[in-house]
Amino acid sequence: MKYALYTGCVAKGAGKELYTATFLVAEKLGIELVEMTDAACCGAGVIHEGNPFLADVVNARTFASAEEQGLDIMTICGTCQGVLVKTLKKLTSDDAYKKKVNAELAEIKKEFKGTVKVKGLTEIILQDYGLDKLKEKVVNPLKGVKSAPFYGCYTLRPSENSYLENPDNPDELEKLIKALGAEPVDYPERLACCGFPILMMNKKNSLTMGGNAINGAKNAGADCLVTPCPLCFLSFDSYQFEMEKYTSGNFGLPVLHTPQLIGLALGIDSKHMRMNTHITTVESLLEKTTS
Amino acid sequence: MKTVVVTIDRFDQENQRGSYQQDFTIEIPNGLTVLDCLNKIKWEQDHTLTYRMSCRSAICGSCAFRINGKSKLGCKTQADDVITNGKLRIGPIGNTDIIKDLVVDLEPFWYKLKKVKPWLFANKPKDTTKEFYQSSEGYHKIEDASTCILCACCISECNSLKVDKNYVGPAALAKAQRFIDDSRDKNFVQRTREISEPTKVWDCTHCGECSERCPTDAKPLSRIEEIRERVVNAGVHNNGGARHLLSFFKSVGSSGTLDERKIPIESVGIGNLHANLGEIMPVGLKMLSHGKAPSMIHHNVDKVGEVRKIFKKLNKL
Image 1 (cartoon, each protein chain N blue to C red):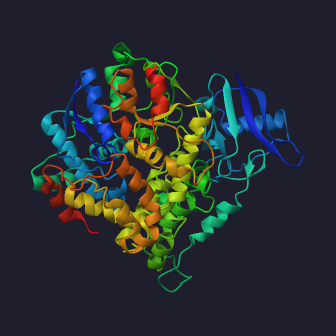
Image 2 (image 1 turned 90 degrees about the vertical axis):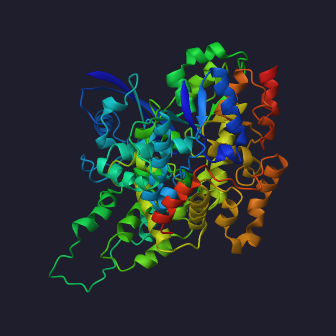
Image 3 (image 1 turned 90 degrees about the horizontal axis):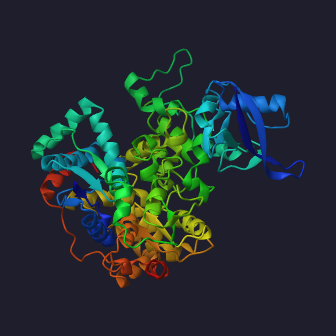
């Protein structure tokens, strides 16, 4: 298995631990990754709001680069995944639009053919790699660890772009958590918004949303929250200490990127996955996973 | 015929019963809608069950309910599509106060709709002897928003509304787009300014629930994206949302990637930095102390010239 890795901006910036954990997990699983060092930011839906055509051309350039390598794209960010799949669908379902976009790409000597596929790491593990094969690689089953799955909006909606079988009531992350030996916990906010998109515009609303999710997971008995979206991660990990100002309840919940939870079960050292750099301490979780 | 247990989330303040759940067992043939199921219960088992309904054709927008936890029109939803293991759950839509059973208070919904002035300020003198035509091209821009039937399905699962009752919500914003983009309206400038104020277009968190639940082509999130495109291109930049968007353009257009050192500062606004330092400093310091501070030098993606060339030609901001 070999993919062109689209890291997204966060994994190269404030979420470097995701970048590190992804490569360590891929190595353990025998998945070869070729980093797309020329790929531009997907725009996170924001560039699209200011100029949809420009955003589509930039993302078509990314697709063309992967096609040149003859590889499908692996994303490690729920938001990148949602934005890229939306663009890919738009381009492949409208020939006239594809031609218009390709006319712009021709100016940088690129062409989007429409052969590339875009898949998230979790989706690849669930659908292409297989949970049975993953279970064989587990050397440190996360027995007794209660993990709260947080899907993230871009993984769920619009449902027609989602890889999930039933985006209104998915169980894919739960299946992954079980395969790692941990126990998924159900809580009311597992399909809600983390609030990150409005953090810079309305901190109160944003952190109230985030705080509600942390409280929900904590009240359901979670030892950690796990998410395939590093923007959700940023909201929950980096800003958890500020959420108490806006919502009352239980805080101090360790937050993990999906590959970090997988990595713990595969026996990868938490420090190698830079879990010691998390803003919200993961000590309480590590006590459980190493005992 | 099949047997279905319908669980209804009921509410009865009048008789001091408050909130409670009630199961009804019904026998139904194929082809019934969820609204048909409710009618069957009301007519045959409990006439006190209260809900709104009218056209039964997905036109009037009266029968929005939470069906298995998500808002849908009762008359447009086939029971067979939502019955799981012989069970079906129906409740009132969310983000509203309940009056009785499935009837919710829509006064705030109408009030917020009025806030966006959902009527035409005609840009030419009124001539009651002629119709005020819109071109096909012009109609295309407002066609989707015009299909809104004001059912309120979109507000039920809205994440922003859940934490902020003052947020105008997706239906009002979809209606705002219908008039912002109407070439016959003379208030474009004023509308773009007003819609950029707090509690309006920039408070949408982009969760996509509104479009997911919308039973028509109105799809509020797409309309919200269109409004944002209009307001930033019209030069309404005196707010965090627009500044955040412009910062993205600047950063990606020059380096191909987001410059995390600048996004928070530029979103707050250089001029407002002093007053808002308390908002961005705590997390900044935490990042620093945990070794997560952005690199001093912001790196470009490889072949950044290609990205810059695209931006140079297509970026109008």
